Image (cartoon, rainbow, N blue to C red; front, side):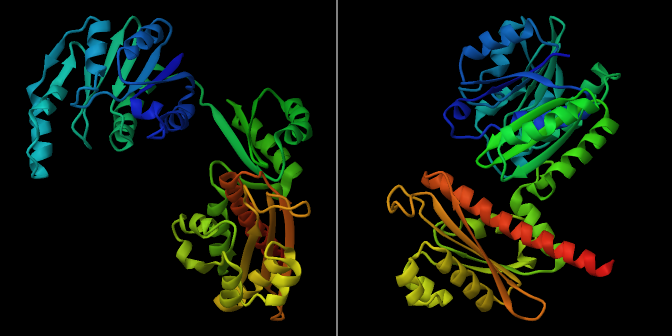
Length: 420
C-alpha cells in the first residue's frame, strides 16, 4: 500500500515549527504492516493543490495535515473540494460543537470559526474532541484521503482513535513490520557496518539502515520476522556490548537517570565549557530529582576555585582546560554535593581560545567516584570534538553522560559479581 504524507504550513518551511508528524505516523503504522513511501512539506497556498493532485494519482492513502483552521491561510478544505469536485456542505451539528467548545471556555469566538463547519460532500467527518476543526476522510480515484488538523494535541488523538481503525479495515491481512534500533556511542557508521552487516545478512533477509550523528550511529533492522530480529539483536549486542547505550529511541540522559535510580546512586555535575547543558539534559528526564541534587557552572577560574576548591596552583600550572583541572572540579563537586558520582567538563568551544597544544574542540572530562573503602577514585579523558560551538557543547554533554553511563554499568557488573 503506497502511503504519502503531506504536511502543510508555511511555519514548517520557515523552520519556526518543527515537523514531527512523519516520525509519529511511522511508529504507529509499522505494527499495521504499513510504511510511508513519501513525505512532502508544503507552504500555505495553491501549491498544496498541485502536489495533492500528483499524490492522488499514485497513492492508496494520503495523510494531509494542517490548513483546517478558520484563518485566511487555512486552505485545505477549499483546495480539496475543488480538486476532488466535491462541493463544501455546511454541517450545523459541527457549528454547534464549535460554539459549545468556546462557550465552555467563556470565550466569544469570531464569526470566522464557522467556516470549519464546511466539509466536502460525501466525506466522512472525523470528530475533533480536542479543538474546533474536524478532520475528514474522502475516497477519490481509489485513494483514501485523510485531512487532519496540524496541532499534535488535536491530530494525535484523532489519528489513533479514528484513522487507525479505518486503516486496519483497508489492510487487515498485512503482516506487521518489526523494527529493532540500537543507539551506539563512540563508533562511526562505517565501522558499525563493517563489523556486523555481513554476519547479519548471513542470518536471513533483513533491511539494514544506519543513521550517523557526531561520534554516534543508530543501527536499524527491519523485517516481518520478529524471531529473526531477535537472533540478529543478540549478534549486535554481542558485537558492540557497552557501546550500545539504548535500544529503541531512549536518549542518553534517560538511560543515565534510569540506571542511577535503579542503583539508588546520587549524581552531581561541574561544568565549564557546556554552561549547564549537562545538568539541563539530566533534569529534562522525569524523576531526575531522585538522583540529581545539584550541579555547578564554574565558567571562570575564580568560580572554579571558590565553588569547587580547584587549587590556584593547578590552574596556573596546567591551565583551566586540562586533565588536572577537570579532576579537581569533579573531586570538588563530589565532596561538596555528597553524591556518589560526579562528572566535570572543561574545554575550548571556540571559535577562539585555542592553541597548537590545545586547539579549539579540546575537551577534558573527569569522573570522581566514591569507592567501597570511602576513598575517591578519579578517571580523566581527553577528546577532540567538532570545533563549532553549539556542536561542541552537544558532543561534550553527550560524552559526559556516557561517562556516567559506563560508571553505572560497571557498578552493576560489580554488584552482579558479588552476588554470584
